[in-house]
Image: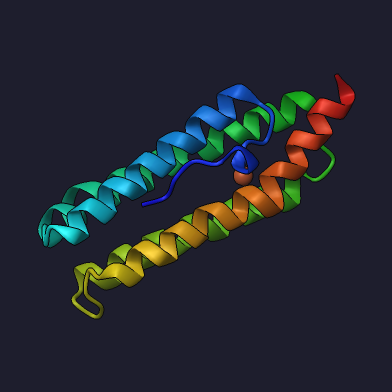
Length: 131
Ligand SMILES: [Fe+2]
């Protein structure tokens, strides 16, 4: 399971809350993997993660626009890559090229946290320095 840590916070409450929700969905997916509910992971949890990620990235980009964030274009490009990655993973699983396994959880954990720590935090610093 991913345990939420203070260091994951980027200092913007609304975005932190959405990141925690993404962590919750990834943890739900881990629970499904542990309990051998592959079908549920594939048909419900992973599509839910894709949908919520789209909503979250969109909200985050809106906040970046409003804040006049200088690196918004780079950040948007990162979001595109991230969405494409999980859609691709979902397609591979659906087609049976890969199976639902613990490596899926490891991948998603890294997928989210690396972006939060490397990229979203930069936006947090930008906003909080301007305040
Ligand atoms: Fe982001």
